Image 1 (cartoon, rainbow, N blue to C red):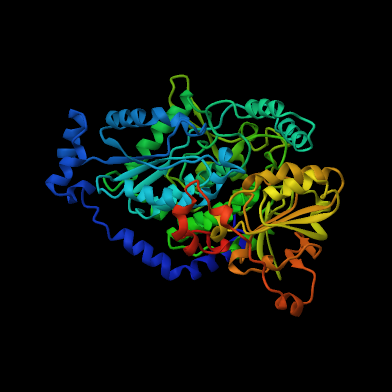
Image 2: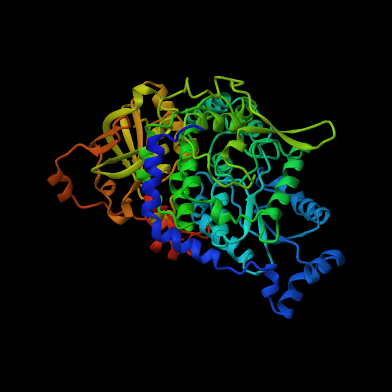
Length: 605
């Protein structure tokens, strides 16, 4: 058996020690739940009658008189999100699978599912990060009826999976797993789409041409195929043992996808207190699983949003994850995958090259993952170094993954990584703490020293570009974009403009207390700066022309001035009234007041 890497072991042990009291309290709470029979036996007759009133005769009889598991379906279905549209048929499919196996399933509730791709650069994006906590609360409401012995969580994108998992962990005494739906077929090459976006930003492509390129990229049911937060979510659920092996990127509406869905339904029932292999979700998500998730993010160049979400997920399980843990692991975990925007390929090509099974096999072989975890598959993580297949009779089985990558331009072995270190790094200096995704940043751009141009709104960057004010080296400081200011929206609207300026030969960087998520691209971007500007962070003291030094190689982020001069400056106070107008933003006043710093998960839960 491969020995665990000493740094992984050390970081895990520190996390355990830091979390000893809170994790023990969490486990004590979920383990105190009575599991001597179906959860619904604790209900009064009136409660129970309400719970099965709308069921068919067979399900009603099973819920009334039986002692087999009843599974909750918590769904993020809507037919506007391409990733979630395939879920339309899942409840009927899951109910039938359950009946055929001798137990029952009910849709317990739905959760909101906004699409960041639609709200990018729009006022609706101010609701995006907050929606995670709304999803978590809605998940808890769905599970609050004590009708259920296990739960199936149907969600894919951005804040939805983290919110579902945070809510699920509040009912961590239940067996549970995530049920993915899979990516859409590949559209136009990502580099072609990116070129059209830059041409449009430069005034050399029409809106009709841009729309045609976007529609050829986002063209079908299924998850968007670039490696942003949605697909980082899928990677995390698999490497943390909450998906079946190989389920993350199997195409939707195929026999293999349906077979995987059927199998996960049966596994959750088996892991319920009424099954023969009891394993509640709150025990799967332990310190080892959380560390495996961090390592997966580094090894794949995953979404920076998980510097927020994974911290919040861990907190929900009584685990005190910190950015320092990410930083400690970043130097020993190599980058093994390049998926757009970190490379030319999409997740379908990643999957075809060996995907999660190859990645996990390579990391396990190097001692960079905890193999001895509990998983919904019922094995340790070594069971995830396999790929799912259907035999000639249509039966599902798993086979060992090939030991060689099917495409070295997309996925590589541990002995020939794309980079010796991971795709995410922490920055620290007199401007506070920040995160940078370096997996696609050229080596000659890891150090940028340039004068600041300060903006209090992302739309002002486009205005300055159109006026010809940005044709030079500079650091774009876009502040008052944190969770307490305006909800910490993603700032992808900046990417085509800044990338175009970088391609012209200028040395460009971005510095912001907002987010860029998994699609930050080739421009060095110090994001999630904390303390944020509205809380008096030093980012609010920067003035046009101040020299900024962003040194990703050495983990530094500083404004180049004497400490006494910086201390003496008063922070700029922005007019945020336009940020708080309309679009439901006024509903989140409580969140804005309570929102934690970015390195604590940027949430209230």
